[in-house]
Amino acid sequence: MNKSKEVLQEIIHSGSLPTLSRVASKLMQITGHDESSLGEVTALISQDVSLSTKLLRVVNSSFYGLPHEVGTIHQAVTILGTKALRSLAFSFSFLNIERPGHGQGFDYERFWERSLATAVASRLIMGRVSDQNAEEVFTASLLLDIGKLLFAGAYGEQYDRLLKEAAGSELRLMELETEHIGVHHAEIGFEAAQHWNFPLSLAHPILHHHAPDNAQAKALAIHTTIRVVHLASLVSGIMYSGKPIDYHRPFQQKARSMFKLSTIVTDEILDKVHIEMDKAAGYFGLKIEGAPRIHELLQMANFELSQLNLSYEQINRELVQAKMRMQKLTDELEEKNRYLEGIANLDGLTEIHNHRYFQEFLSREINRATRSKGVLSLVLGDVDKFKSFNDRYGHQAGDEALRQVAQLCRGMIREYDLVARYGGEEFVVVLPDTEQGDAMNIAEKLRTAIEETPFTIDGRTLSLTMSFGISTFDPKGMKKCELIERADKALYCAKNKGRNRVEEYIGKTSWFGLS
Image (tube, rainbow, N blue to C red):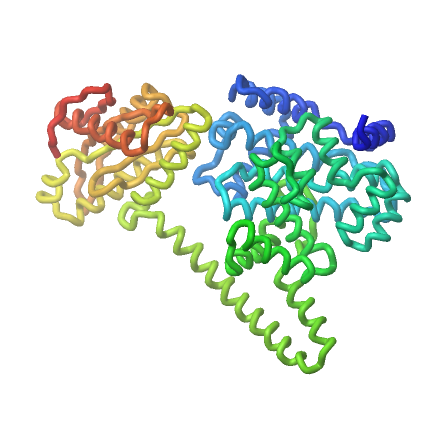
């Protein structure tokens, strides 16, 4: 038995090793093989009402920024995938473990606060460098220093002395741990992760986050994750070490060398950490009274350095003031950008989503359907004889008709569906997790509602009809353009058969271009 296994056995016998919740432990088992189904994962998580509620709260928060509210665990698993839900479940499991005993020198609340800062920073960084699973890197970062928690619980006052002697230096602490315990906290954290049967994507970052370049061949497949969590640990060092400049410079240098991130990008990441951390604390039930603002810590640190040399005092004061003015302008600009981004996604006439947002939404849903082997349907609708309507009643009446049709359609679809203006008098509806037969029923309800609705325009009661075409996504190699093209062909088939009807794409469709 190697030294790390011996030490882990000591920790287990001391009663200091946390136990995974039953759901998290079972979730590890069923998501550890390719045969696991969405149904199994959904059924398991749904057994724990408290966990299900917490997961849905996070999924529907700005943590994900989904366009529509997710109402069930099944929808959450379908949209995000089993790995994402597994990682979130692990995060809740560890953040809600029973508080272990430890020495007076170990600050338990501070430990989890710093761990959350690392997790939030890793998620922000991963969003800039890769499209890999952000939930897994979040969970891995949350558990990077779990070895310290184990040591504090098992060795109490002895570990207090090591913490005091290290004086905040991670490298010195690891040296002391190795000297007095036999292994350092990263090694025992990795050993514990293996004991819990964690996947390598969670275990290897714990082992290598202090020295990512020393990762072994087995860890190279997740080398990006290891480097991201290393950078994130430097960010939490800026916030909690008491020596922000000592961590800030290495963070900028390594971000540039590892991922070619510019100073502008790294500054944007650092400016967002405290905001996202405050949000995440609420989502995960941690009590944090205001996360440290990195730019203020750096300002203060720079100001203190300026006191060492009076010749630089005035320069630094002016820099601090300039930085504060710049921050105020940045905050105002971000607020305006958020407003502009919101209106940029809407069609000015109909007040539903526009064509650009539809394309982005459809791409995301296709990626999710491909990843989860799910289903997705598309409905393309066109107002019948709209040119004649405009010629008879005028373009202003036509615009009002389109607006009323759009609002009618929006009120009839599910919260997580999307209705958008495709162009002119054409509308499109994206139906996630919907088979072709169900999509036909939905389109028929829309068609019937439009046919039976009296549209009041300029004091006149007018009638409209629409034709619809349906296509369903095949996750085995179908491209987005092909899905849209099939719906378009089905729509023209409906037009050719007399309008005011719903047609589905059936492979070889004969059609004529009728308006």
